Length: 442
Image (cartoon, rainbow, N blue to C red; front, side, top):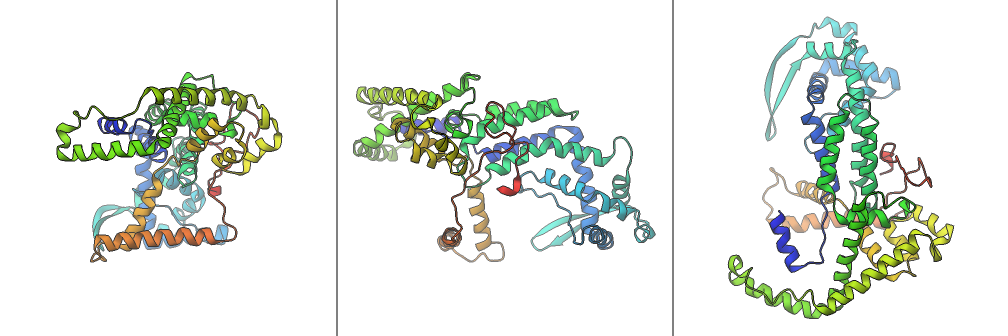
């Protein structure tokens, strides 16, 4: 991957990239679920309980009746799914909600009459796949009814409390909204939540967090953190990597601005190089010394001047001089996407405005692409497989774009945006919003 990215930078040295934040957080949840033995064992116990009640009619019927008696409506168990982000946290959450009905179910007279015991698993063919049906009635009843100091319910509660901050941050960024400005602070808050955790595996969580944050960190995330108005007033000097990333991002944006101003010359160079490489890509990649035209003395001067102005203008923004001294301008950022706020109110700092609009308008996740893949599965599957690829692609594009158009035509439509965390609004340095973030608002 590094070699491939090196080839990209050779041709487009002004480009920047970030790992998909949603998938990095998903990998963090995978680390927690697979590398901590206590959690791995708990996930297996949850699978036994959910599998038993979900796959057997009478236990499930009794459970549903207990839910109706308690809430007036049914509440179903959540099954773990390989393609659902944070699936084990969701399974644990729902089990905790159903703790009382489940305990009542395994002690119900009708349930006890059946004398359920563990039996061997069965293979069942459904549609296009084979499924394993488990029969662990005895084990499931023991786990549900346990009241020991190390019972399943206390361990589920501990696991959900420890991993829910990861899931909330993941859901916060799992959208098409430009939330890149919230990523850096989110990782910091996540680390704080692990540090304050009372779980016996809190040290492991902290280690996994540091590894994945190092894996997912890049300069543009630091720049987005410094430019997001929500974090105006934070101490950006606390970590040298923040300002280092900010300055590196300014330099890349300056390069891009120079290229945009001289696009005709670069277009000719790209076409010439593409024609040369197409003859023998393996050998010719190292022989085209005349390309890229970047950087020249003229481009260096442009980059230096642009970067100097943008860095100096950030001081005006950080110290809240000029229009940034107006309270209504700062408060306006609470209700609108950060890049639109800069587009509207950054008129007095042109260079910094350019950097901010480029950076803060980016979506830090590629999960929206997977939703398009889901649209493709809706159009073409194993049973509906006679469509040719070109026709299927057009149908997917039509289906996806029509949904977007219909959504945007609604009178109440607003552009996707993630608001400020409300728990400590205007307090400045430390924010704990990820820990208490309301998932429903996404």
